[in-house]
Length: 298
Image (cartoon, rainbow, N blue to C red; front, top):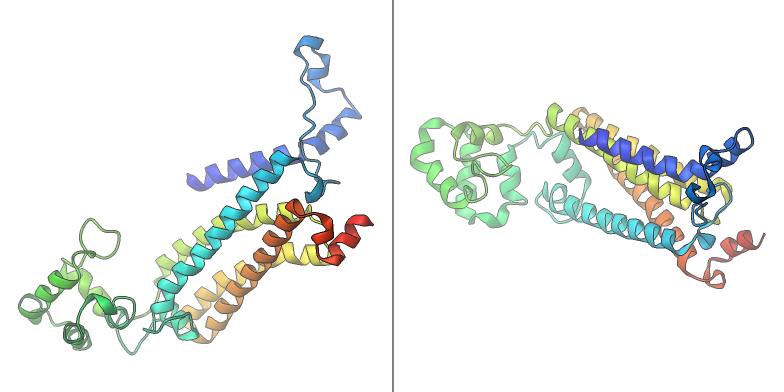
């Protein structure tokens, strides 16, 4: 339902943006219905509407500058938060700070020499328990998580160090149940098919709309036409590479490189479009990059 609502809102925004163009075409054939109304009821033309066929960012009215600026700034902060979230989740998969190829392999292909429990205890959850406790839990997982040791040895440690977060009210696995603990103590096979499907459709639907509106705004900039088209298309291409690489890495770890390439590609293209749009909206032309100013004068 959320996706349907998003599509409806996006369609409404695009229809509003293209309305001046449609209005001109319709006027050549038939007068708009509101012009047939009495003068007291006729609608006046909004001079602040955007005609994207010939308007540039430097010439749009102030309300639209604030609208576009607010959107681009929020999206920019959102992209930085997404990067921070990746650093704090996937970036800890191998137990070392920073995102590496091993982090991506462990996240999607899995660390098949051990369990998810072991990976987490040596990575993001390392600070949650002392070394002796982590060693005991890891050894239990390596011994195939025997149920005979659960009540006497393992459950008290789980209750003390893990259940404050891993409980029935949380969205993460409930470690008060042995069955859930045994699942993460099994050999780490990486992301499941259901997880990949869920995350893939969220990214493809949500992020593509971000690139749509960023590209739409950037399309009104003074920029070399060939590079403008390349920059607008780049995020969509690299988003597909990024998402497809998750599925390929699930079975072939070498494709983890494509995850790095995809994320880097659409991040760079989006950054260039965002900064270019903000500069051309707010800075005087003599402070622009010389080639932009040349195009604006031409």
